[in-house]
Length: 335
Length: 289
Image 1 (cartoon, chains in turn purple, orange):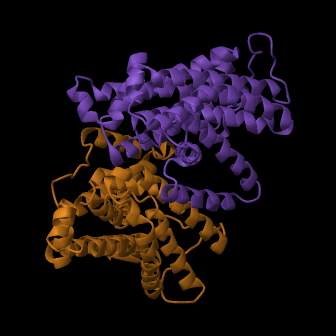
Image 2: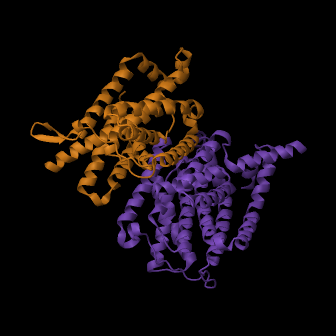
Image 3: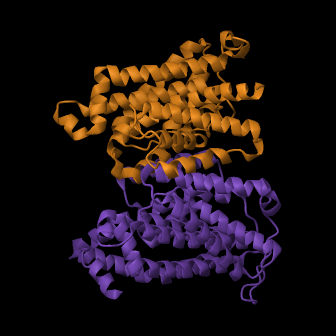
């Protein structure tokens, strides 16, 4: 595996590689340090920070699909919502162990991604975009109709998970929730990094770069994409279950077109094709959203709209790529 | 029988509105290969302008319609030069989605700031309030007017694309932009004119359809999926494809709402998935104009 990895990185410039490796190796300790620092610094905002951690995992799943597989989707929330509802229904009726609930959410998200992915991933461009939207709308409609199980438009409530590992109870200040979400995010990040660096991850990148060549080399592009879509579905499902477990409720908006679009905006804000871009984008988006939307949701729309246009026109690659360029320029100036 | 007739009239009228708005999107997508998610926002802007012109300034309906379409086209033309020209081409799909979603958000926020979050109406003239009788049946005059305008749009576009100089150049540029440019067709001007045509159609549909797709600030986000669905099913750049897709989806959606009201949009999206699964490039891809 390492031979393949070195072979891949050899094509990058030495300087770019240095930056990337430094950022990659340091990402997990830095995230843990920032996460814990935030835990001490903002004890009032633990609820928001828990949501940020769970959403970051969701955006990470979108990054796997879009950044590493090149699948433009506006339906990632189908997997998120399925995972959230599966975990929520299981919690109300049968199971209460939070880690088992995450597993249930992951399996549900992965299954729905596998089935729908096999159905729709033969398409490209606008058609694929429409199909992903159609999938998320149908899932939402089914959830809305199955009132007895999901609570319909009232949402699903009454999720009361047992203590984590039998030791840490979910307290009313949300301390356990936050630390649990942070831990799940860090584990998810490490797993995602492992996947991206595996031969399978490289093959997916190959499909993104040039489908025809992968086919000519004897690979099956669609099979790689479906597998990647299903794996990302597991991540999205776990993220949904994490939201359900930590917040105690699941609403219809967790499986909506607009939630998918918001995740896409967060990802692009941070920069696609880099795992830490997903994290940075989510933190930036949700923090600004929290500050601006408190006054008037339309201020928020104006701001995010202008910001999106500015990113496309002036900084294609998002925040992280702009910083990387700056970083490289500073380093280059010294050398 | 009454129900079937009602579904047919409402479905066709609804489909015509979908067609008028979506065909503008289809033409720009076919020529410039740009997924313009702000298309619905343009239709909404026109609706608001018409509403203000009719209610605030007291202009008659037709004058308000013309003013709204012209103003929208004039207001969006600079955007073509400043924003859209940078993202033409199918390689920039993600940039197109993001830039035009951003633009939509900005327009939604501005509309809300200027007109407030409440529903706005465009008062209809007396001539459109009654009913029109066709043989033994009678249908609401507004529906008949919408269906007539839709049919006129289909014929007008067909004439424009098949019978005029502009249409020939346009079709040449759709087939091969580089070759068309090499032959001396000014593609930049052509793009600008096509963009204006697209927004003009969006504006027309936005004003005519205000009764069926109510005007409120989230209009731009709520209905864009519908318009994109029509284009995806009809195949980008095909007039008759868009018309057939819009009518079919309009009738399916209306029938679903009449007959099985609790299942909302389920049938619409189920039909969409089935059609796109079988014909990924649209039902009419490569068949007609």
